[in-house]
Length: 141
Image (cartoon, rainbow, N blue to C red; front, side, top):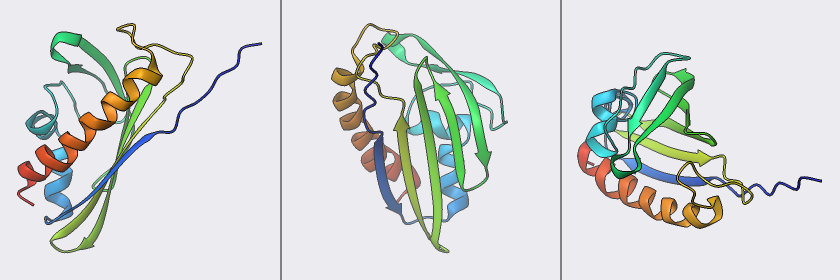
């Protein structure tokens, strides 16, 4: 019997002092994603297949699975993961941004032979730095 243990998604949340349209441009355009995360061939089109250029880790295939501008973007990342960006307008110049990185499974390893359970904590710390520091700096919030 194959026993699969799913690990909870990584969730990061930040309130940015910027209009929702500005935050959307930073998280749902190729240039925006590159400015705080990594180079890519992203296009904001449902079903679009693109690549994240992950430096030493090589290229990761991705596919847009949901897009609802300027509120929600989801895409698959590599073999197992899904990333979702949720935006919520709190005020004209205030936007809540939530990142959800799901697809963690204690029985699986990444394409780079790293167990999900081991890499999850490393990725969680990385997302803290990316969302809290780099994204907020790019937004100017």
